[in-house]
Image (cartoon, rainbow, N blue to C red; front, side, top):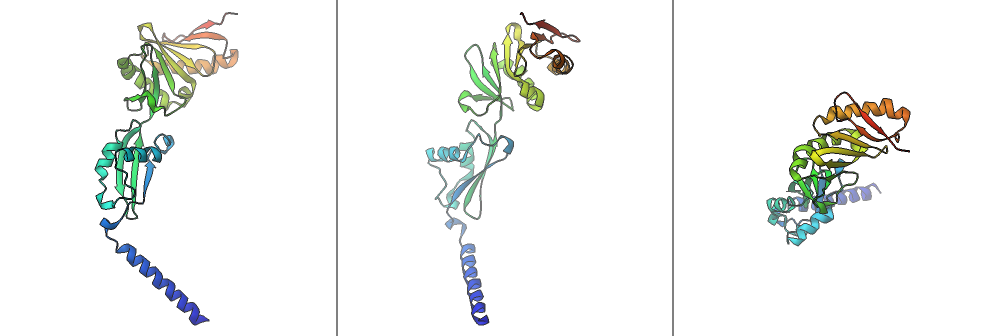
Length: 245
């Protein structure tokens, strides 16, 4: 019985060695790409770019690597094609010894949706670049309306949007930014039936800090729906307009 078990073990070891030697002796130019592996670096925002999208783009360009000889796959060309995708910021392609093409993607993250009075419709990403409206990539973005020309959006609203993105409270509270005449700013909050009037967007951090304190000490006591308009335009004062009965 021991001899039989020993023989079986020896056969298994020999079988493994044959398979291993065969695998290790496969030359790189004989390897065939078995699959694409998509890695999203910014995992918090994962889901905008999908493996299906990537594969579809490569198929349309007749550059689908699956089934192709690994030696013939041009990683640089694949990177150039994929970098043109409106949701991809950076892309890196490399091959693995197991026969996979790995594609590492850093996505563009939209932080504002622009729907201006002049009919322009687009997104601004976290690097201040314009993204097309067909991106349709994220919910719960603040929407910019009114007299929002592109120069004003990039020069003034982009820094404001970055501030909101990094501030959990205001990122959750503001759902609309309306640009009125004279490039003055109204904010529409998600909580509270009132309009926040900033005036000029300059010094927004201090204005919103003052407003947050008023929320805490004032609205929490009198109620969030008591006023129709709260102005923080002027330094050291908050002007509230009561709702009409």
